[in-house]
Image 1 (cartoon, one colour):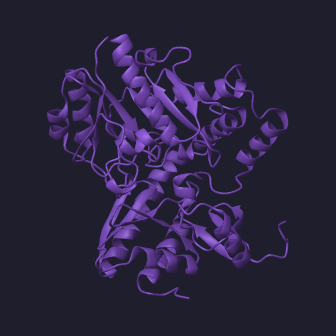
Image 2: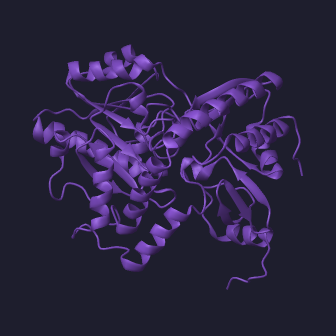
Length: 407
């Protein structure tokens, strides 16, 4: 039985005895959050520039979101997709009104959304177009989730170690190289699957012409274009969807992370035509589209619109980039700002800077951040942060880079 007198260290020790060893959590237990701040079991306050890995887009304890979740929990939590529920329909309409899509499938995570998209694309080719196209062209350093097909699509070998043989039919080419994509397409290619911005791969933003070229190539070659917007979507890059920066639209798009502000949800958005790949029984998710998650997602979308948070992200994202570049000029081993909007990062030379040590020191100073790719520190604060929060965060990061915060 849990003892209410347990301190943080005792809780951490207990967790390490019973949890599977696939995570390396930092030795802190959070119990409360407010706005862009988290508080641990010992009462220490942290500026949260992790946001649950780009999930808590409205910050912690946003009153509109928490009230909506509480209200929904009192009325209806779950009924399954054997029946309709209004929260799901409302959320679907909100997503379709705000995007290119005409159909939506709900699930519980980004990996599941990618699985749904890959299944839909293959089934569409075989049962609708009547062609045996099954291959996916993906990119090196991509990340698409932790399920078996998702790690097969992922272009980073360390995520695949020990899980082979992988699912066949995935070809990987360099990111940002449209000519390499075109050269890899053959008569068995079903779709091109890319992130508009590589997140886990290191916060890599391609030239604006890249996605435009992919749209033209896919149309000309008769293959589908699928965007993984699990990390880039729902306003994080200063547009509601990252594809909007390029002025083109995909055929399918996976989303998750910030969609419900912390409640688990994923969704696949697609055109009317590609949705023909699914028929009754073709795919399902027991918890997908449950009333609680959908009510939360609808609320997040409404708050983002009403509070002008996409525009705010674009503005403060520019300030964050400027501050990171200024920091980079002062600290040896730093290589400049990465990313777009509040999907931001600081490039570092791993031969000079130990990112894990920096993250630990930043935490001791009261700043939470993560890493991405082989050479970047990632900053993904909630959309509600102000310029003053950014200034404090960058100051704490600089102090951590210079060796402060060691215990």
